[in-house]
Amino acid sequence: MAKRLLLILIVLLALGAGLFFWLTEPTRMESAALAEQDSGDAKRGERVFWLAGCESCHARPDAKGEAQLELAGGLPLKTDFGTFYAPNISPDPDDGIGRWTFADFANALQRGVDPEGRHLYPAFPYTSYVRMKHEDVADLWAFMKTLPQVKGRAPDHELSFPFNIRRGIGLWKLAFLSSNPVVTLPASASDAARAGQYLVEGPAHCGECHTPRRFAGAGGLDHARWLGGAPNPEGEGKVPNITPAADGLGSWSADEIAEYLATGFTPDFDTVGGAMVAVQENMAKLPDEDRQAIAAYLKAVPAVD
Amino acid sequence: MFHLPRPSNRTIALALAAAVATCGVAYAQNEAVIKERQELMKHNGAAAKAASGFIRGTTPYDAAKGMEILTTLQDTAEKFGTLFPEDSKTGGDTEAAPAIWEKPDEFKAALAKYKADTDKAVAAAPQDVDSFKVAFGMVASNCKSCHEEFRIDK
Image (cartoon, rainbow over all chains, first blue to last red; front, side):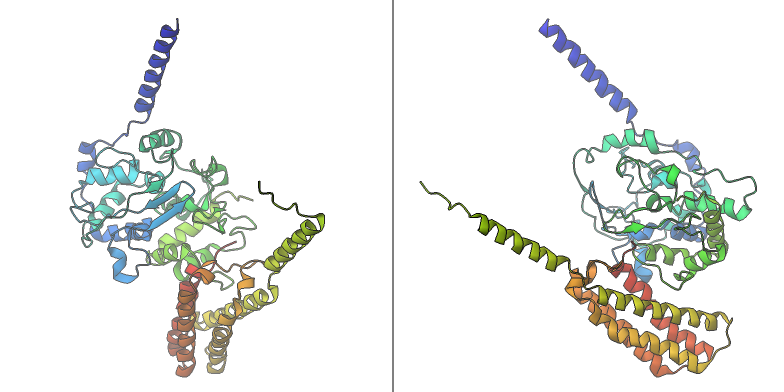
């Protein structure tokens, strides 16, 4: 009898493990379909690069000017789950991503799967990049390939159990990875607001910091409180509410939001601070119409009080 | 066999009183100094607002007013570094980041640069809006670079 129970238990465990492996299998996009789209333009890709803020994490910490284009990695991102280190994504063939194909790049960026088929941690905001247009991904890839090759690898992530089990990210993705738009804009929304929706929800990945996460910060973004402000993932303080609420951007005009993104000055002539400084400086490099679009969208999203 | 002497009730009471007093000291925040630095930052905000009127051309440039803006920023630079004693880390809605006390050398260097830039701007004594733009821009770059590391949003 005991033997039979043990046998049943083993079978159940095996089934459970099988189910876990089936559910957590990393899924890649088809290479064949992607290969046709590897026809990006590096010049257009530079805009996508600043929009996506790649260098805010992947350049060496505190890099300024030309050094921002040396994507050596190494920035530590200290969280409740442990410390992530941004990897080298320069075109170096050994330490960076110089041997990657376009399909490898697109799968990392939009599915969080590396060329060896392993899950990447969502500290890398592929949960937003999943919404990017293929042409923008192709342009970005073309630009990335023009950047300097840099030697040296970042340290491995230092994570606590169970977050150190990469396979588990598969379950997390089943629950939280989706390319659907976050908000439904009213039919009357302007073209600028619609353009801004793509920029904010996709490449600019604003929600990753400005929206609280579910499950004590370990889950996906809480769409009911989209852009409504969140605790600072890196320590003390908070990331502000940027919806049109009273304690958000309610009193700011769209022009004032665009101006802030261009200059770093708020309507009261306070200035941008903290991690937003690097983001604002990237936004300042965009064409004015992109900043106007982001502003129009931020005025059109539901206010979160 | 060794026995610890049993503390008398009086000893316990004294120890508790001492502990309470220590906590009291640790939490007695220097709110006056916090208020003072917040006021100085408000002066800077008002100065930046006036500067933006000139730079955007919504207000015609006035050299005397331009100098007033730059000397306001210089005045803040002179006083600011003295306003971060150990007992002003929290309280009074301060947004001062712990990095100010954790990396005092970096903070000092940032303040020294801010001070040097305001001195240069005042010495330049801009007479037209184009030279004012250069002088003000040089000083204003310090706002962001300092707030990036040394201020937190609360």
